[in-house]
Length: 208
View 1 (cartoon, rainbow, N blue to C red):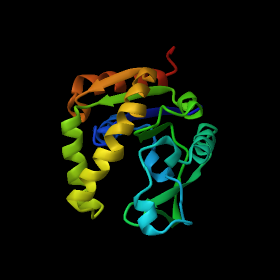
View 2: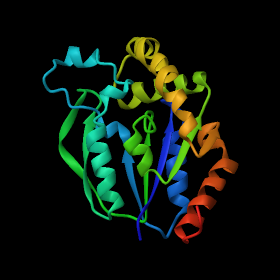
View 3: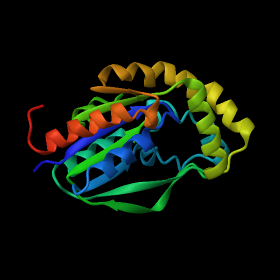
View 4: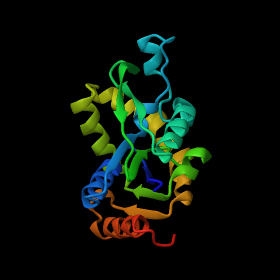
């Protein structure tokens, strides 16, 4: 059976990963494979570290949509893929990849997931996680200081110059492509339960 591909989009810090994990945990015994759109940033080896830091990583051009669309197509055919690994400290892809095996359900999340038409068409269920800007900023600060080793002033400068403007220009408008919009992110148990019920229905072969 063709795997069911679930796309989860939303702003940085909106709670996409939390929603994805709760969906996956509820789908047992179905097998679930994960893709994170952050792994598909372009690999600018030709730039210095300082130049890479100045790249607008929140613009659609920062992503390798060709590779992402090709790997989604392989997973849709029941084939494994070699997902890139991205280092957020050096702003480069790692030398090794991660094997993502075929699965009953493929869950992919990313801020600009619905911007590319090829990727949208691969998503059988499209979810947009909608969270207030102040909450997203707080979560981003916590994440980037703890796991990406970035100073607060750099985080805030990036938020003001690229993250928020690109959210308004690209991320927020992509919400119109969603089948389901989840306010309050991973804390919205009712919305997540509805998504899980929809996926289970589709896995049983129910009509779309």
